[in-house]
Image (cartoon, rainbow, N blue to C red; front, side):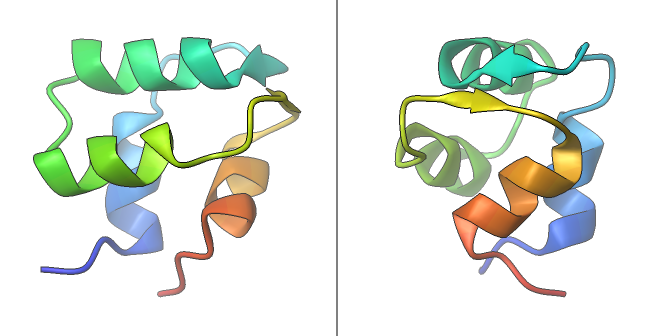
Length: 63
């Protein structure tokens, strides 16, 4: 099942931005993200993200 923006945002709750890719991936894992979400986040470019919206936009996920 494809990941949607709302689901992705749910697993990013509690992170302080800006955040690195590793911080985003680790927090999603801590929040028990689904395999689909984890696979998507692990493919993100290794950089700093300014907001959940930045992560969502960069991931290419649409609602």
